[in-house]
Length: 388
Image (tube, rainbow, N blue to C red; front, side, top):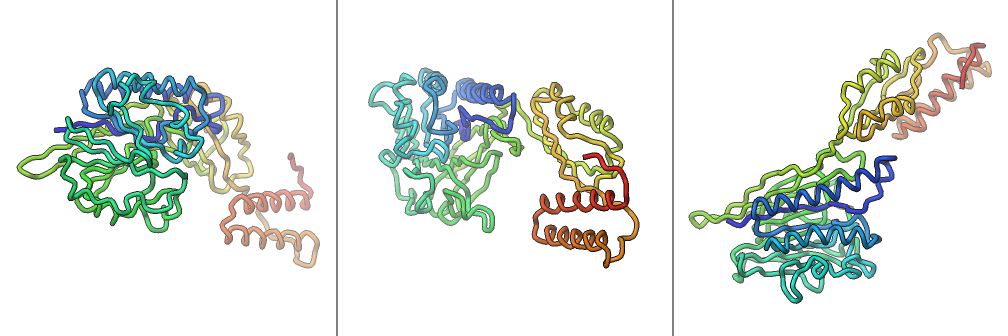
């Protein structure tokens, strides 16, 4: 049996603009998760370590970030674990590529001219490891957007150099209505026609797996989340390739390497009694490894005095990161509208029509703003005190 570790989307050096004061801490967690993936490969004595793109978050990286990545790869080289990686859509293989600026193989201590650590590119699209009876194909372009399907024309069924054929691709499996406009798109038919035993994907940040024809494909997800909206990250895949009784078998096992968890929570403000009650409910979920994204929805009762930023500040120490977004809309004052031939009545009806138009157009932000204007307008025209 051949055993591989498959990872992708490490995004070393990411700036994490949406993580506030925790941006630097999350960058450190990403480095730690990559180191943990290397630990796993060495502990499991795997044959190869595969990185399916976006090891780096961009091609603009300080040398220190590249050196830290190379130091982890050097542990694999020293441990006789072969390494193959490809550029992705963030560390794209263009003229400014980090892989052109730095010789990762040399920095990781791989002997000159060896295939112990290989960056697969359009100039070097594959590596054959005869000792493993394995060929790894890298389907890479020198542009962020692929001009064609990466697997177009690939058919390894007649390639007898090795028993096993694996490919690395950074892109999306084509899903009609969802992914056909992504930068790199792979058709299921092309996967099936490739004859590959295993297709190691990168690009999606949660674990996904499937089969097209005889080819098993999978995404390991990001070892650590990269943004607030990325639940399901934190893993790598331990891949087994085995032939039994003339039949080939691919097995996949998820292994946790990251610490950070992402959760989303949607709360109807009609069910929130007060700001202290909301603070108490969220405090019970506190976890230093949890990024919690809370969205307040529904019609907000007029009596509810709630400031999302205050909730965030009060509970910040209980979470790795807490974000509270108030997407609720103000409930309108009860009672009949003024007659339509009055200024107050005409204004109220005009705003109501504009609210309906914004909602029909799928513009919730505009609808919420118009609802608030209508609410305040009616209160003011009724002679009631309003605090802005």
